[in-house]
Image (cartoon, rainbow, N blue to C red; front, side, top):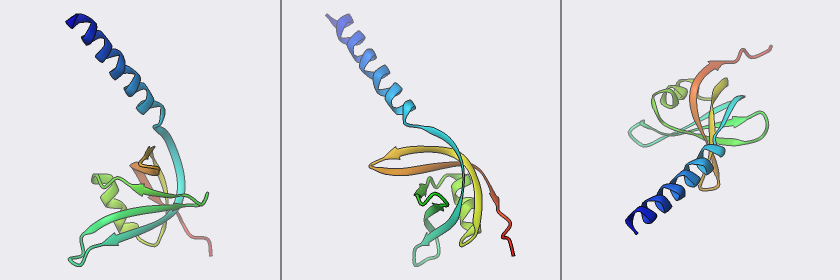
Length: 102
């Protein structure tokens, strides 16, 4: 009986993990950086407004926090996009400023 329960739990977990993995997409995009700060000046959110018209919330890990230095500028970003609570969330692996044409 316990073995059947364990097998059932493991199968359920593997299906859940497969579904999560299927929702993660490697991407490269260009967009403008928008930063939100609290009253103390701490970064509380970073959004990339892509050239495709999508707003992606940036995960505030080490690379995500570095994005704040590009506030108001265009960047080329490499990372992974996942759907979280009906929002697209971007985990940044690399970001490079895009030269503005004059």
